[in-house]
Image (cartoon, rainbow, N blue to C red):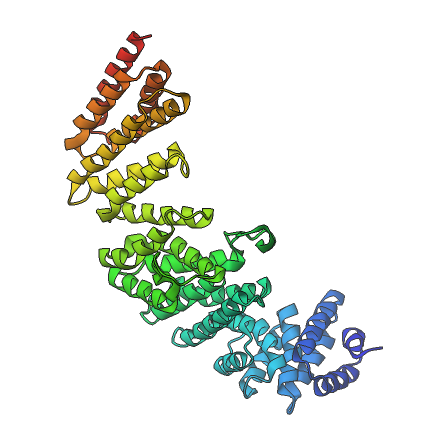
Length: 488
């Protein structure tokens, strides 16, 4: 009969105590002892023989030399049963324990940390750093103080950079990246409710750790898909990202600017310009994709200076990318910038999306993008620039004036986009846009196109318009509908 079976079934206190002391003395693998304590605790709890379990815990409490082994065995019993006596014994053994107890004890500390205060947690963290065990660092991160979490974040970040470099050499695995993500999620728990300025550096380190391993989540080709994770990432990844975004959104614009500048300093590939001769690897491209997605959610916190100097150059680089994920993220980032009131890029962006239609974007995306540019200008200090955007759209409609089925479809879609702007343009420009729509609808040779434009305004545009515009727009739509019906 093996020792574990004796501890789980024996009815003799003396036998249980002797076997406990013998196992603690002879076993060098601390986690093996922890698992043994857990299985013995569950078995004794199931059989109702808690008195014998008390004998195991008491023997651990009396141990003088092999404290780490005694703590591992008693800790397994406590985690399995939540026994109060086992809890007190564990607390006492932790106070008596000097140092981390060796590499095999690290996983035991991770199991005990959620239940027991660890006075020696910094020594355990130092041991995990020495062993480069990023999983242990992540498990212990939520339990270190806010003043010490930067040390853990730096170690996790260093591990992420190592994974990124090995990925570019073809030697990293998805499991390596996943361990870093889990560790980063542990560190990010400090950001959920934290407000200390010292956490700004932690935010930057966690962001770059996730960015450096984002290649494992991005589905850039069929052989790079890791299970069912995909671009959205694992649950740990999503939890960490939520913490990053919520922390950034609670900060002032000055602090948010400093945080974004810090991550750009950590990841130089974010500053590469389109004309740069430096070729960015797929791992770095994954990092860029992560940062575009992150900046999309915090663009409203940034000053115009940071948006113009850092954010927009990054988006411009990928706004016409042939890669779908990067293309979509770049446009989402620009839309977020426009929604935050940074209207300087609005005319340029209106020109870009008109050039991308219809080869890269459809009518719905054109409508959303163009309307965002108009709305940003309408609320800016230069609303008159909306005229330039409208002129660009009208010129594009006039290019489709020739006959032909395909041009007829494009003309109808562009007319619908023009009609949508009556809900967004400055009031000074409203009359001009309404007149332009009237003229193009009246000159349209296809009755179906005229009907679709009027229907689009009536069913979609009126609902999104401000209340002060609705009476004018309703009267305008009624008159346009009457003219279209009269030409049946």
